[in-house]
Figure 1 (cartoon, rainbow, N blue to C red):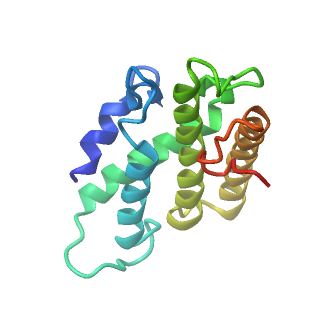
Figure 2: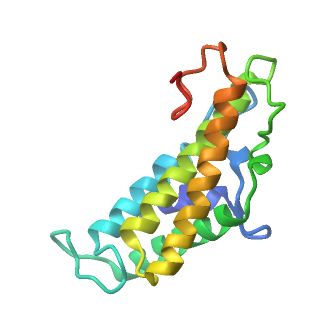
Length: 170
């Protein structure tokens, strides 16, 4: 329950999306590691039983209302990530990871990649949608993840930014 307020602070109800700009500071550094928070919440949902139809895997009391709230946030994030574009993370084929805003763009790329990865994990491990629906969502998110990593890989060639997860030299 301690993680949900942090996630809700980054969620913009008016636009029904995460506000990734709230996750970085003025210098472009990540201040709110939203993918890590989402992964922790998804892990709790998984340990509480994964899909809504399965039994609890964790010992001790499971708080159904907390699992429901957590699942709701994760589901909103999935629906948002399905509709967002690479440009929503201020990334495109012209993004300069070496320029004045290089730290900011690297942080945005890390957030974008991390969000796509954790929401893929959540879909595979914790949803009880029919297989066709899950498979379609997985393919859409995986394609977007590949688009982002390819963009970052191309734009960071020789930049020494192998620290961007999934974007190291091949």
